[in-house]
Every structure is written in structure tokens, then in C-alpha cells.
Image (tube, rainbow, N blue to C red):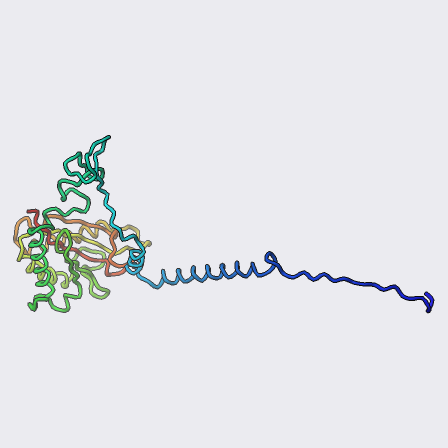
Length: 277
């Protein structure tokens, strides 16, 4: 190229592409949603680990519907089987029409045993026995040492007295049906208080879960054997014939404490039953 010739002019165009909706901040929104979901997940895991079974049940009940729903509806079971959805005189059937005739035969119905004047009198009597047992009325019939092993509550079935073992104070010698002096002292007190009522008594045995390494699981035999041993002791202290009406062994199927092998699950339940009439 000669010096007097002009060099060609080259123009370079650069196209700048700015971020639009598709290639811009949309990923940030998705990432924020993901982080929020993960935070909620780990918070849920922490809450499940930090709360007890009763607390979780209370939380679940808080979010459950509060509108009562009944299984009993109006009308009959067939076509035109009822003249009104509220009629008690039409073909009434539990769960399909009308209101059941006998409340004692309905699901959850308590009948004459725990409702009405007779039921209220029985409940009052059971609570009186409970107060006597726990020395709430000022009568010192149960020492503080023994009272640590006792929990009571009035149920639809009667007054339930739960006698449970402590870590260093068992009710029976390990793996046997031989009672300890503590259990004998507790039973003496309970029999004395139960003698204030003529109601029948049910005895139920429970044991903690045994280790997996044991050669033979004896939970059923142990729970029923211990319940029957308590029956023998009870009848030797209370000479009322036919006082004990039921003896049951539940093995390790109903734990009082979440830890399956806890000493607290080794327990005996005595129920002062409601009278049928």
C-alpha cells in the first residue's frame, strides 16, 4: 500500500443485550422460595424433636375443625322411611336415622352408670375415695414415700389407681412376680380405702418392653402373673368375697412413658368400678 492511499475505515457494532424477564431475576425468586421451604422444613423437624406427644396432640387439636359432627342423621334406612330429619318416631336407627332410644348402647354413651343423678352420686363417691387415698382431705393415710408411686383419676369405668415403679424403687423383683415391701405397703393402704365402698375391683398388669437380646420375651406371662399376684394380696387383705371382678395382663402394649424400657412402664392398675345400678 502506498503512503498516499487512505486506509479503509472499519466500523464495529457491538450489540448490548440487557436482561429481560426470562433471563433476569426470575431465578432469584425461585431460589428464595426454595430457601424458605427448606427453612420451614428444618423448623418443623426441630419442633417435632423439641415437643412431647401431648404437646403435639394439643397443636393438632388447635388446627382441627371445631364444628361438632354427629354420626346420627334423620330419616329411615329405606325410601321415604322418615317423615322428618328430626323425627324420633320414624324408623330410627343408630347412625342412619333419628336419635338412639338407649344412650347406653351408642358409641361413647355412658348410660345410667355415669350420667344422671345416680352417675353423679357415684362420681362424687369415687372422688371422695380418691381424696381419702391421696390425703387431700387432711387424713394422712398415705405417706409421702408411698404416694410417689401412685397416680389416680376418675374415668367412665371408675376410680383408676395406678401404682408404678420408679428407677430405684421397683414394685416387683426383676423378672419375677415377687412383690417388694413397697408394693405390699401400698396395697395395704389401697385396700383400706377401697373398703369404704362396696364396688367391685379390676386389676390390670403392665410391664416395660424387654430388650431384644433376651432369649424369650415373657411380657405377657409377666404382666398377667403380676396382676394375679396382686389379686392374691388384695384378697388376703380384703375378705369381701367377689370383690375382684377382673384380672388382666396387657404385656408391654400400653406404655405410660414414651421410652419403652423405662421403669415407669412397670405398673399395676387397680380400678374401683362403678356399680351397674
